[in-house]
Image (tube, rainbow, N blue to C red; front, side, top):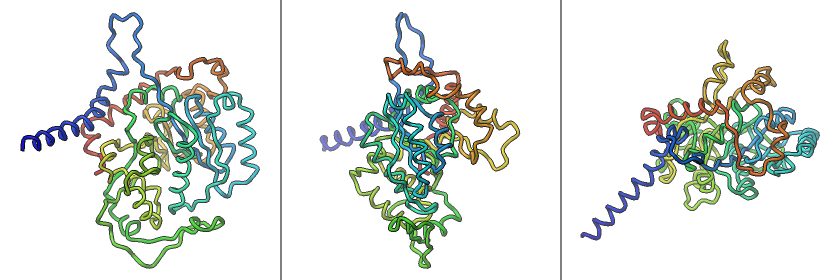
Amino acid sequence: MLASHSRSKHKRVAFFFLFTFPLLTLFLLPFAINPIQTSNPNPNPNPRPPRLAYLITGGDARRLRRLLRALYHPLNFYVIQFGADTSENERVDLEAFLRAEELVRKYGNVRVVERGCHASNDGPTEVACMLHAVVILLREFKGWSWFLNLDISDYPLMPQDDILHIFSYLPRELNFIDHTSKIGSKEHERVRSLIVDPALYISNKSGVVWVKEKRNVPSSFKIFVGSPRMVLSRTFLEYCIRGWENLPRTLLLYYSNFVHSKESYIHTVICNSNQFQNTTINNDLRFMLDIKPPRQLFDAMADSGAPFVHGFNTDDHELDRIDRELLGGSMLDRQSFLSYKLPGLIRPTTMSKKMERLLLRLLEPENFRTKQCK
């Protein structure tokens, strides 16, 4: 009896430390970023920065080049994934650009997927393409902590040094993913409807086919939906790919006939996993451009604290201003990085304070636990 009580007590203690320590670490973020000064003449308050793994997708080599230049940092890793219908000239253009960049050759941290990924816009092949890129990152690059998926309509709003600086103080198991289980009117369209994605079977086909039959709402797991843009931990993605339990594989089969799978598969896996459902922050760290953006669009983006913006459909003049006033120019143009002896060295700017304030708002009690997998 006593032994059983002792085991139960130990389980409660283990549960408390497992889920409370990450939370305490996050709430101590402002103190970690602005540490109290001590008498130590050579304090070293900054932890070693993480390494980020980016998936960049698109078919326009010119816009891919611009996005990569804005995102590039020697510490990070990059996989570039073309669509299957991208012309050979676009691929040759991008590969020539990569060969010409001395910094890229020096660090060898950019890969171009050899075969374009054939995906239907509304089908599960988009999820398959993303998971394929994750496999490449896990296989070829060691030591990264977070995965970020961007396309040519995304753009950074602050230098990579600032993002790496702030992420240095975050627990490495956190996942930034916009999600909700309140799907409302979408239930009939998404959950009960069935589709067939020809791109799963035939390389020159695209566009999903709707099936007349309907299926029941699942009872063994709860459906979640949200933004297809996310920041996911390496630990969680290893769970999805290598799967030490059946949940990711079971849901992958279910979502093979699900419309807009990219807006639901990852969300449903993470929120139905006992191990990962308490690691989510309900935000994708993107500033979303409205159809009719505000008159002071640039100021709104710069002050948001979001590290990325989503919604640029053209090579807009606003991107030039972002480069000039927020990013301070491309990392690939700063040849001083070639002389760095320590690849872990980062140089954050005052932009990091804005991202810090955003995270603190997300971590307020009414925004954090209450919005996790609800």
